[in-house]
Amino acid sequence: MRDRSRVAIGLAVAAVLVVGSCAQDDSGGGAASSSSPAPPSGTAAQQSPGQVAGVAIPDGQIDSAVGQLDRIADELMSSSKIPGMAVAVVHGGKVVYSKGFGVRDVTTREPVNSGTVFQLASVSKPLGATAVAREVAAGRVAWDTPVKQLSPGFALGDPYVTDNVTVGDLYSHRSGLPDHAGDLLEDLGYDRAQVLERLRQLPLDTFRDSYAYTNYGLTAAAVAVAEAAGTSWEELSQREIYEPLGMASTSSRYSEFVSRPDRAVGHVLVDGAYEPADPPRQPDPQAPAGGVSSSVDDMARWMTMMLADGVFEGKEIVPPGALLPAVSPQAMSAPPASPDSRAGFYGFGFNVGTSPAGRVTLGHSGAFNRGAGTAFTLIPSADVGIVTLTNAAPIGVPETLNAEFADLVQFGEVREDWRELFAGVFEQLNAPSGDLVGKEPPSNAKPARPLQEYAGSYDNAYFGPAVVSVDNGALVLTMGPAAVRMPMRHWDGDKFVFTPQGEGANPGSVSVARFEGNRLILSYYEQEGLGMFVRP
Image 1 (cartoon, rainbow, N blue to C red):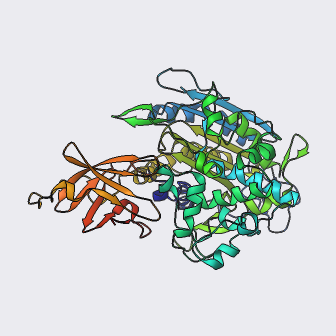
Image 2 (image 1 turned 60 degrees about the vertical axis):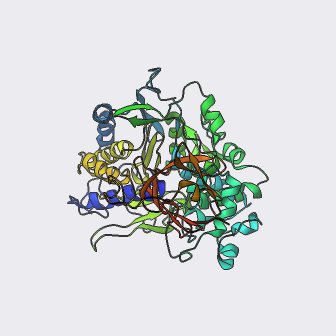
Image 3 (image 1 turned 45 degrees about the vertical axis):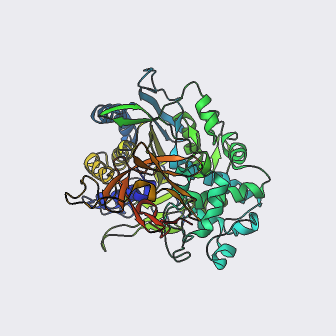
């Protein structure tokens, strides 16, 4: 699956939550009525101006919701057939639920437990945002510090944006960079420094007046913050968040994830059955955006801190003044579909929304095509949070479980058919891309020229050379530092097709490769107008 095609899953999830939750919202939304017998659970008796209490939660309703998690998890495991899952819930400053389901690896059949370490994918972003907030509180940076001041070598495609884009701009995806800028370079084997250097070649949308989710834009900001602190991002996140919270099984390094004896292996569907991903997902280049691994036990500690406004076990970890901007709307990520529907917003690394019960919700989803589906949801006014981690390619299971739990917490019943809603969204997101998917070459196809005439190295400043060679009577396309090989199949005349490779490519996708004299146009790499390769 291409992360960019789903706008980082989180956008699609936000849209489903906004649209789906409006369908049966007969609660009236907004604040609880004056006739409510008691303030909502987790809400202070005196509220600050503008604070929304939400529909009151009766005593025992959150406990009842927790009591239904075993059933929900078992049903989703049974219906989806995913190998493994872990779930944790925090409420009232305590972990009230923490449990594993299924297996870590279908080959070893070792069970998942609450300490099993999973890859978090994009749930890494809010974790990293809290590390940045610590640096903000320490006075080393500010959310509005220009990135170039922290990292002089940083540049984007416009001099004004280069000089003015801030840490917060990149953490809220409002820099103007294209959706998922740089991801395709990572798929070809470029390292972090190489990807960040090439961002300056990309066209930009309107600065601070557009939203496009970018792993590498956020990574550029995080790396700059670490540079200002005189260390690496991996060390900074460890020092500022994982160690103070006692998250002993959490890391921003892939090598530490694979060294854990109790870790969940990523799985993909092969002929209808789950198998370990081969090769596995190695996300170190974009570690601040997608490279964290953790357990639900560790994530529960972080959620407890978040719900306590930066305090954990009586100690202030992140001062509220530095944390609040991260969990406040900074960019509109999901515009309302109609005048009576809610919008979705993005903070600094967090999705920020309003539930049908009138309560602010914070969350994020994460997904790897090679075997990770993750999500967390916080409802601060109810003092409750849930995290769900799975070791299978994303099909919406964590989002479904969290949405059903959130309904039970706020309403005492599941208000929407979240299973159908998310199944439909993820089916679309996982669909193969390309105009020629499922088609065969025309019956009257023109013959190709002698294959050797197509062979050669075609240059591209952004993607690097695309090397076309003849191997056993067929063309092969080889790209990137990883020498990714993609066999080419003749289609019609000078038109060939190939299957894109890498984390960003949905299974079954098809790309057209069109030869025009000394030029090669690859449709898969053409989204930003950079898919033309020229043979000298």
